[in-house]
Image (tube, rainbow, N blue to C red):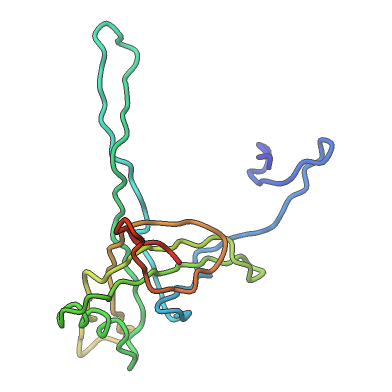
Amino acid sequence: MVFSATNGTSGNTNNGNVNHELNYVTTNRFYVELDKAVVASFTECSGLSVEIQKQVYYEGGVNDQQRVFLEHAVFTDVTLKRGVTNNQDFWNWLSQIFQGATSFRQNVNILVFNQAGEIMQSWTLIGAVPVGWKAPALQADGAAVAIEELTLAFEGLKVGRTSGGGNLAQRDGSGYFNSN
């Protein structure tokens, strides 16, 4: 893969000639898989990020450098938004925690497609658990679509180009969640 400095696109090289691939990815072509089913009614998915914590140390006499030691990965919570319907999946999932359920974690897949409908990227939130739910603001003079929100915390992240099916999270022998 070569990056062309003239027009900012990437493509494969073939004897110095650049063949450009038009696999545009737009932010409006995504699906979210929960509980082994594609849920295409989400209007927004935000907060998907990871940050590696670091410690910076300075050596005496070395004023033009620093030493960076990496520590833990910190995953931010992901917020999913959708228009309110008579489907109560979000609330039912959160209610399992209120009732003391022990198997309420799920792997959640976020899939982004190109214009041709091919999966370009998938993010699997491993061992996701709901940590917040928000009902829409209700206004007597409002005409906007009512949007509910679900906030998910998760224990790991897997990035790929295939659908994971929203499989239920399973703990391996060491106690960690995997994405089987």
